[in-house]
Length: 252
Ligand SMILES: Nc1nc2c(c(=O)[nH]1)N[C@H]1C(S)=C(S)[C@@H](COP(=O)(O)O)O[C@H]1N2
Ligand SMILES: [Mo]
Image (cartoon, rainbow, N blue to C red):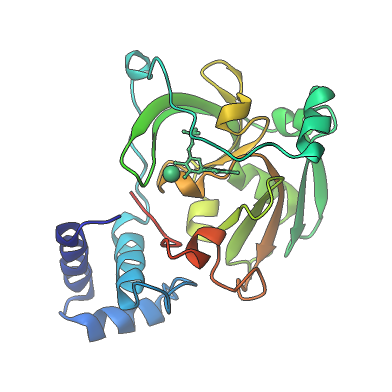
């Protein structure tokens, strides 16, 4: 996944940000700012904490690159997905009229949104790159409602630290911290390249966050849970990917 030289660069960056050097300082900074990822005990050990903390300190306010229309990929690659289940097929047969996004957890007003409800919230479109951890990428225009608007609509509580998102696809879920959840480019996406989001790309609803790798962009999302603790989800590592040894935080 990430190359050694890149990691070294990041570590150096963190040491600079910390005004010191070495793992111990970086670790202390990570603790101080609450920048310890939920999978920090995993396969990569302190490296995950280092890169998460470093990226967070260095890219806190940064925007992912947005591209001119002329660079939209002609044939965006829809990555292979497992067979769609019966629940999905039933909703698809009904033109997704009954598709719902339930938002619950640490919110003042738990809410269930239809696609039309979401389309009535302020929309944003952006031309960004989707990058798979395997190396390929494509550029597309994504249309959706910024997650911050959804969180505002439901009244996310100030103690919230993460948003967990689930797919209708079994064992497909992930989570992001509030830094990414409240980022203006994080979209609950329902459109791509001027049309409804195609099934292959996660239609009718997908999490789209251009500041992290492809696998964080979960397709077919059905619910969001706002929480201050990832330990009670799955094996407590913040995502299915992390349970398989992939990093929870994959900033790009
Ligand atoms: N539900 C679901 N979401 C998913 C996946 C998946 O298999 N199922 N694959 C992920 C991976 S590994 C990548 S790289 C991107 C691919 O997005 P694309 O099909 O638009 O290229 O979707 C991500 N979201
Ligand atoms: Mo991927």
